[in-house]
Amino acid sequence: MNLRIRTFFIISSLFTIGCANGQNGGTISDDDPETSQAYAEAFLQANARGLAILNKAWQAHGDIADSSLVVALTIEVKEGIHRSQSLVVDPPYERYHLENRFFIDRKNGIEVGHFMNRFAGFDFVNIIITDDEASRDYNVLTKKYTDATSSGFDNFRYFPHPYINAALARPQHVCYEGSVDYKGKVVNRIFAGGGSSARRLYFDAEEGRLLRVEYLRNNEPYGDGVSFKDFSNFEKFGPLTLPQVIASGGNYSAGGEVVNRFELRAIDPVVNRPTHEQMIGFAPADYSQVVKNQLTELGNNIYMIENITESMEGDDYNVMFAVFEKFILVGEAPVNAATSEKVLRHIRSVSDKPIKYLVQSHHHNDHWGGIRTYIAEGATIITTEGNAAILIRIASAPSVLNPDRQSEDPKPLSIDLVTERLQMNDSANAALIYDVGPTNHAIEMLIVYFPEQGLLWQADLISYGEWDLNDPRSDHLLNKIKSLNLKVKKIAGVHGQIFEGEELQKWLSK
Ligand SMILES: [Zn+2]
Image 1 (cartoon, rainbow, N blue to C red):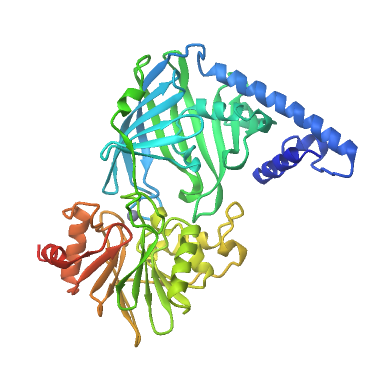
Image 2: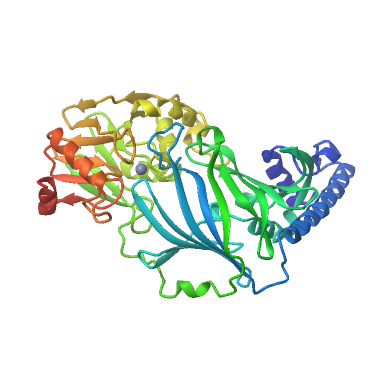
C-alpha cells in the first residue's frame, strides 16, 4: 500500500467521508492486494475528476491568458462582526462597516489588499500582499513588514483564485468526493491538499465556479471546527468573474455564524500598473532588541513573563503570576495552549505550589486562547458572569487536531465569578480583583490590585510604551483607580512595558 494514499485517507476521513470511500466500502487492508488495487484505481479516478473540475473552475473565473492583468476593486465590509474583539461574549455583536481597496495582480501572481480599519479602539493601517504560498503584512504606520504564518492563508484570501491555484499546485492531493445538493444547486465537491492546507471545495456543476471553501481548524480555545468561506453573486470585473459577496465564519464565532460579509465594487476594472511599487521604503521589522520570554520580578512574590510569545513590537503578550502561601495565582492565558505551557515552565522555575487561580481580564480570543491549559491544571478561573456559559463550551471542546492537556486528561471546569470585588489574602500575599466594566473595549473587565506592592495588573486599558496615554481606555482606568482609591506605584499589563516612577505619578495626578 502506498503510504501517501493511506495518509490521504486518514486526513480525509477526519473530514468525514474519505476519498473514494464509496467505491470500496471504506476498508483498506495491506494484506489484501485486491482491495488495495481497487482502492488505488478508485483513487486515481477521483483524482482525475477533481483535477478536471479545478481546471474548469480556473477558466470559469476569467481569462487567464492575460498575464499583465491588474484589476482594482473596492471591498466593502457590509456586516463585519467583532467576534474576537467584541464588547460582549455572546451575540448580538456590534457590527462595523469598512471600505478597503483591493488589487488582483495577475502579472505578479499576487493579491494586494489595502486595509484601513478601526475597531475596539485600535487602528490598523496595513497592506497585505498574498501569493499562492504566503502572505506578507506591511504596516503603513511603522513602514515595517512581517511574514504571516501559514495558518493565515485563509484569513487573507478573499477570492476563488488562490484556492484553485493552491489545490492545483498539489495535484496528487486532489480528490473528487461526489456531487451534492448545496443551497438548491448541484455542486461538485472535491477535497484538496493536506495538513494545514487541506480544504474541501464546492463547485457549481454547471458553471464551474467555486462557491464554498471549508477547512478544518483548531481555533483555540474553541477547539476543532469547520471554518468556511462562501462566494456568491458572481459578476464580471473586467475580464475576471468574481463573487460580489464573500462571507466567512466558523466555530470561532458563537454558533458558527457568518462573521464577515464583504461586498465588492469595481472601481477600475483594469488598472494595468504594477502593484509592487507601492511597497518601496518598507523594511523587514527587526525585533532582535525586543525583550523576549523573560522572567521579571514585579514586586515581592509577583512575577511577569515579558513577551512570552517572543513576538514583534506592539504585538507582545505578558503574563503575571503571584505566589501566595499555599498557591499560585496567574493573570491571563493569552494566545494558545503552547503559550500557557511556556508560562508553566517559568512558574515551575520559581515555585512548585499548585496553580489555584487564573484571573482572566476579559473574553477576547487572543487573551484567553490558552485558558484550557489552566482548566486542565485544575485551576479555578476567576472571571465575570457573562463568560460563564462560553467557558463551559471551551472546557469541553474537542481538540483532536491540536491536542492539549485538557483533551488528553480533561478536568471539570471550576469558575469563580467576580461581581464587584473579590479579595484573597494569606501570610505571603494579598490581591483585590475588581470588575472595572463597562469599558469601551469590553463590557466586563477585571483588574488585579496588589495592595502591599502597590501593583496594578490589567489588560487592554493601558499599554505603556505602545499607546498614547491619553487613550479613552486609559482615561477609564485612571478614573477607576481614583474612585477605588488604589495606591498605585506600578502598572503592568498583558501588553506593553512596566509603567512606574515619575511619569506614572504625573499620569495619576492628571
Ligand atoms: Zn481585548
